Image 1 (cartoon, each protein chain N blue to C red):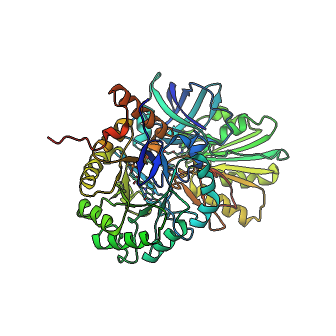
Image 2 (image 1 turned 135 degrees about the vertical axis):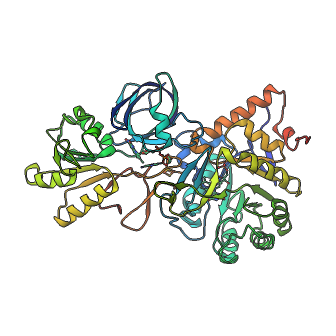
Length: 253
Length: 303
Ligand SMILES: Cc1cc2nc3c(=O)[nH]c(=O)nc-3n(C[C@H](O)[C@H](O)[C@H](O)COP(=O)(O)OP(=O)(O)OC[C@H]3O[C@@H](n4cnc5c(N)ncnc54)[C@H](O)[C@@H]3O)c2cc1C
Ligand SMILES: Cc1cc2nc3c(=O)[nH]c(=O)nc-3n(C[C@H](O)[C@H](O)[C@H](O)COP(=O)(O)O)c2cc1C
Ligand code: FES
C-alpha cells in the first residue's frame, strides 16, 4: 500500500457516461488482487478527497480503472489528459479470495459494479465463470470482451434494449440448476445485493457468496472509521480495510 | 537541518507536527504506509469509557477545499486502547496524546483517572453533545468549560491536560481563558466548524447526521485568526490546527503563536502528509537560515 504520483496514459469514453482511465505508476505497487481498489485524486485541487475505484487491470506499471461520471470529482477526472499527474493510493482493501476447491464461480454484476469483477475472471483461468451482468440499457453496455472469458456469459438490461429484459440476480436464479455453483461473487447497487441476499434466503441456498460493498471514504486505509458498514453481529466493519469484499451473511445490506 | 524539537508542558516532541484526533486512528494503518516514529506525536481517535458504534453512514461529504464529517465518536473504548494500542504506540517513541470525550461530566473524570500516568498528555474533546449542557457541547459556555476542565484536572495527577476548543462559540478568547482558569496546562484549537452539505437532486443533507464538522484547507484563515487570538489571551501554550496541508501552513500557525500544530484532513488528501510537512518545514527554515523552529513562534508582526 503506497501513494504515488501516476501519469495519465489514456482516458476515453467507453459507454454513456462511463470512462476508462489508464495511469502509469512510477514504481510497482506490489501484487494486486482482483476486487482490490485504489483511491485516485480527481485532478481538481479543490477536492481534498480521492475517489475509490475498483482496479480493472494491472499490467506492469499500467493500472486501469473504469468509472461512471456521477458528481464533480468524476466530471473532473473524465477530463484527464495524457501526461496529467494524478496522485494514487493503492492497492486497498481485501479483494476476492476464491478457495482452491471452488471451481464453478457465478459472477453477478450490476452497472458500475461489474468493474471490480473483471480482474477476478482475468486472473483465475483455471476456474469456470458463469457471468450474469446487468446494465440499465444498451448505451451503458461495455467491456463485454473482458466477460467473454467466462464459460457462459448472460447480459441483461433493465429495458430489454440489449439482451433479455431482466436483472442479473433473476437471470442467474433462472439458470441455477444447470450451473451448480461452488461460489457466487457479486458487486452492484445495494438494491441488487439485497435482492440477492433475499433470494438466497428464500431458496434456502447456502452457496458461499461474496459481495463487494461501496461506502463514502475519508482515509481509505482503515484509520478514520468513516466508511463503516454494519455486520450481522451488530459491530461495525470498515469497508476500506476489512472489505470491500464481505461474506453476504456477515453484513447487513 | 534546523532543530525541530519543541517542549510543551515538560513533554518533549521530536518535531511540532502531531496527528489530529480522528484522522489517524491509533497510528497502526499509517504505520503500514510509513514508519510513524518520524512524527512529533499523535492525538488518538476520541475515546470514551465504553466502546461506541458512532453514527449512521454516510459519515462524510465534500465541499470546496473542505470536508464535512460526523463519525460520532466510534471507538473501541479506553480499556481496549490501553491493552491493545498503547503498547504499540509506546514502541514508536512519539508523544501519545489521548483524546477523550464523554456524555456526562462524570465520564470525563473517570476516563482521565483511568489514563493518568499512562499517556504523555490528555486532550479533552468538549465539542460533542453533553448531558450536562442539555445536549449541547460542554465546550460552548465558559462556565461549562471551566467546570469540566477542573474536574478533568483533579483526576490527572501526573499527566498534563490539553483542552481542545470548539470554534463554534461566541468568544474564543473568553473560552481559552475559561480553560486556563479551570487548570488546563495547554489549549488546542480548532476543532471542526459545524456545517451542512446538501444533495440538491434529493433535497437532502448528504450525511446521515444532517450536520457535521467542517475541516480541511478551506478553514485555515479562520483557524489562524482564532489561534492568534487564543495564543494572546492565555499564558499556557497553544497547539494550533485547522486546514494545515503544507509545511508553510504549519509555520504560519506557529508564527501566529502556536507552539506545535496538528494535522488532520491533510492525511486524507495525501497519506504521506505528515512526513512531507515535517520535511517542508525543515526546508523552509533552512532556506531562511533559521536554526531552530522555536524561533518562529509568536513572531507575527501586525500591520
Ligand atoms: C471500494 C469501491 C469501489 C468502487 N469502484 C467503482 C468503480 O470501479 N467504478 C465506478 O464508477 N465507481 C466505483 N465506486 C463508486 C465511486 O467511488 C463513486 O461513484 C465516486 O466516488 C463518485 O465521485 P464523484 O466525485 O463523482 O461524486 P461526488 O458526489 O461529487 O463525491 C463526493 C464524495 O462522495 C464520495 N462518493 C460519492 N458516491 C460514492 C459511492 N457510490 N461510493 C463511494 N464514495 C462515493 C466521493 O468519493 C467523494 O468523496 C466505488 C466505490 C467504492 C467504495
Ligand atoms: C474524520 C474526522 C474525525 C475527527 N474526530 C475527532 C475526534 O474524535 N476528536 C476530536 O477532538 N477531533 C476530531 N476531529 C477534528 C480534528 O482533530 C481537527 O480538529 C479538525 O479536523 C481540524 O483540523 P484539519 O483541518 O487539519 O482537519 C475529527 C476530524 C475529522 C476530519
Ligand atoms: S475510509 Fe477511513 S476507515 Fe475507511
